[in-house]
Image (tube, rainbow, N blue to C red; front, top):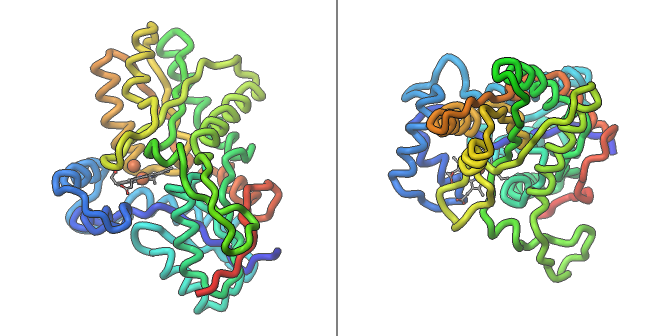
Length: 341
Ligand SMILES: C=CC1=C(C)c2cc3[nH]c(cc4nc(cc5[nH]c(cc1n2)c(C)c5CCC(=O)O)C(CCC(=O)O)=C4C)c(C)c3C=C
Ligand SMILES: [Fe+2]
Ligand SMILES: [Fe+2]
């Protein structure tokens, strides 16, 4: 299938603090969160630079997502028919529905949609998919559901991990472990959930399936480790934790970063390098949760904590995305669909 356009999908973030309540209602699908949660998130976003009025620069998630879209479009040969890259957000402007409407107005009839969240979960990728299919009535859509095992994605993460790990080991005078992380999800998400059977006829009963997300996230981490041994690094000690457990919906999956840091301290480690492998650019879960909150936890434990730089404008990440677009990497792809109203 040749594609007239590419649609990159991302989370979205408010531009100013006063938009927080409306933004959160998008994130939760309309469910109102308590005022103290809204205020706590305003406090966190304020600490990563969001203000009462728009800043000179867009918030990091917006800035980097559009940068990635621009770089991918350049890599594909510029904004020609077969290479135009659009960016749509699920929870804030530019909303996926508005961007798909713009694509339609531009004459696009078929496109490939790729989430800037490589590991498939029904709480992230599943919601992006619904937003796209709801908006794309009559258009032909190829939806990429996962690209967690793309070797260039692993290489991009390894390139960011290697320098900070080497520095951490040099400063500590010993080999420090690496703690890979991905965003947590509610326990009920991974245990059961309704997923349609790929290729099923309309009316076929739904199937209860576990969410692939925790396995895919750990697979990405394993591939980063494998990649480092390819470049001659001796095996590293590594661990995996789920970060940023949410404020609602019962228990969320772990182990949490906080408890893992405690366990690492208890086994005698003096430091640790964190690398989040579920996020492709800077945003609040990195700049606040890791750089401020986990740093504080580590300080209290007398543990030194380093973080690998985010992928942001990594040329290797852009090559990975290019492979997903062209099919050079066989991503997990939904059947091609033409949604009807
Ligand atoms: C794989 C799952 C998820 C990814 C990846 C993810 C990324 C992500 N999330 C935010 C900001 C927020 N997320 C919030 C809630 C929330 N997030 C997920 C899952 C993933 N998020 C779930 C299941 C939920 C709960 C939704 C609900 O209905 O309650 C919130 C709200 C406050 C909270 O609960 O923490 C925010 C804010 C960003 C910025 C991000 C990556 C770019
Ligand atoms: Fe989230
Ligand atoms: Fe979150």
